[in-house]
Length: 405
Figure 1: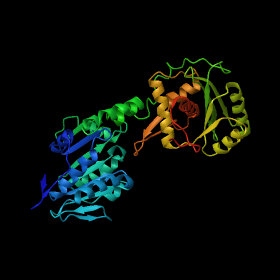
Figure 2 (figure 1 turned 180 degrees about the vertical axis):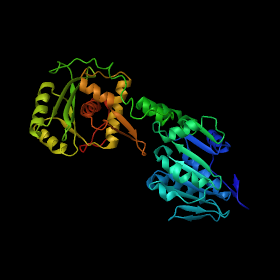
Figure 3 (figure 1 turned 45 degrees about the horizontal axis):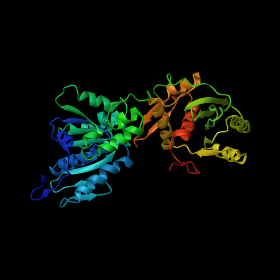
Figure 4 (figure 1 turned 90 degrees about the vertical axis):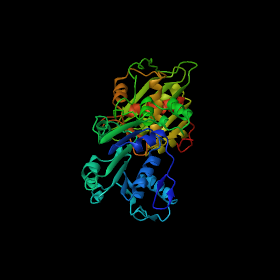
């Protein structure tokens, strides 16, 4: 409970680790949080608490859309505070104490200069530019000896990780916490266990255990030990097959990946470059005659859609896959999980092994991951294999337009 001059205010109920953070005397607090740990609730309580005491508080988000989370939480709490004045245009709430709390975005860091602040809370700090803190916000705390709170799910070993490390070094002004999702007593443990069962280890560790994972490394593990499949030139009697298809564009390659369902193995790769679309269709038709696949899952973006339509008219069992960041992440995660659990065999193909080994990841503010090859390199064999594996063992149903259901 906090109090204004005459009225008691009901603040958000905080769980144990939230209370420990709020009560800690450090001036600068760095919170490395798992998903759903409760960082928004704690941040709202800290900003409102500072404003009720007559202070000036800023909630900073990496972008305007992301700032909506903080603004929604502040407004909801302010509704129960007598004579609190909410200003939608400036996203500011003023209190009878003379204090205020305002939500800002860091889209333009230079716009954050000029204010003297008692508290600045940097939400999803791992996605902020370092200059936002060092050049714009840190000086704003100097004259009032204001405090800083840095809250985020980790995103590799970047600026936020360095701040977290600083909080571990014994400086009395700084303190940092690692706060996994399980620290929130309101999260059902079975939900965490369920996530662990379906997510690749690196994603589960980062998103739920709040581990700092080296970004861009280790998307696929165990690829060389999985390179034990035997190449097949034709279908084995009694075996079922699927084919994943990634169409080439400009300098990219067109790749057809054939997966044997009984062996759970990639048994054939067809890779070509700068081939006319008519010839690409012909190569796929010839491959289908050899393996008689149950299904072919083919990328439908751009020129893929008309090629798929023609292949269907030719009688091939082609399903379209519409590639978005979300759908690509889903099939890559499924393939990575197969490698981690030693459920897949692949050919000892140097191009494939090189592309798998060099495949990179980057966490986006949305929480999704952007996957792809490093600049100047290719990932065509990886995508074709991921599509084939998804069609064979992903367990998802696909609408005609390629969206997951």
